[in-house]
Image (cartoon, rainbow, N blue to C red):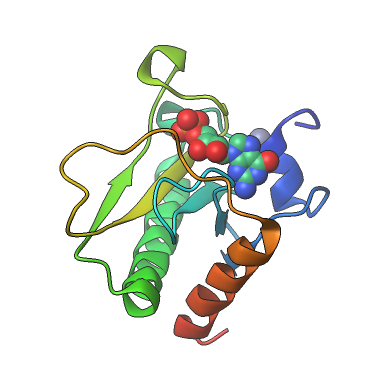
Length: 138
Ligand code: 5GP
Ligand code: ZN
């Protein structure tokens, strides 16, 4: 789907700070960082949302999520990690291509996310991505 931002990232047509990639999914730094180390894991093949995934694709994305989660823990040593996704505009979704948010959580965070998010410069995203890639052995 050529007008989809995450398809373009998966195809390398627009830049992203990628931390992990396999046959089925790609993981990259969210440009809007709820907390430092916030990563999105997206299905490579366009699927609008959770409902559109077949079982194999769902399992493959979950594997990518687990691998990247362990690497975020190693790289940032957060007290916790929030893993979430949204379906539909009414649930706050803004990009309609299936993806999961991995958000490191720290001691003073409380239950809710703090808004607005940070939009760090590309160098910071790249530096954080490099720490996660190193934890993955990439
Ligand atoms: P949603 O609200 O759909 O679950 O999340 C979409 C996320 O994608 C948002 O957190 C937003 O910051 C992120 N995002 C939107 N456009 C881009 C982009 O071009 N590059 C990256 N890395 N993230 C994006
Ligand atoms: Zn797409």
